[in-house]
Image (cartoon, rainbow, N blue to C red):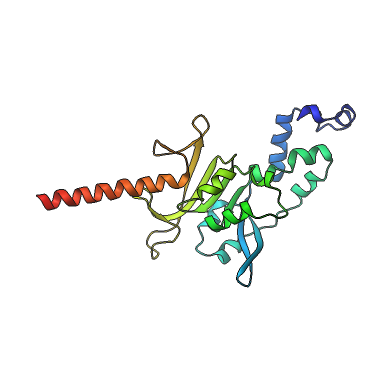
Length: 227
């Protein structure tokens, strides 16, 4: 990052004379912490793009309907726009920052898959920079994960029992409310760790849990019948 700054520009800007790591901290402080809620925009029966809403907190994702989530939206604000238009160097250093620093929340795994694959105004390299996403249980498609190479944290929104693999995106008749479970990727093994167990993909954890629960359930039933 430092090598690309010309001596003339560096001397004229107190900001650019700072170490790159310190500049990054300043940028992140300026743009703040936000959640970008992404849902598909439909024209008739076909998707024609995406709608974006800015949320101050991830807790708003626990609302049961899109209209309630969007009701909590706030303006994206001028801070980011001001940063990227300061100069070429600052633009280069900050243009990917919202994808790295914000939580990108998708209505469902299909929306995420379409957003990742659809060509549009957001370049692929920016999408690939996502580090933290939120998506309803049981998580993103494996094909989406293979594209999001920098992904480090997944927030799963759902209801039910993750232990049994019975963790879905819908509240259980108002009895079991929506909750958020956070899974983090281990840097050394590049695997998602949950309950001390690694998995290559997020969805693997729930399939393994469901399989183990089923085996345990039928085993207990067999023993009960035998006795």
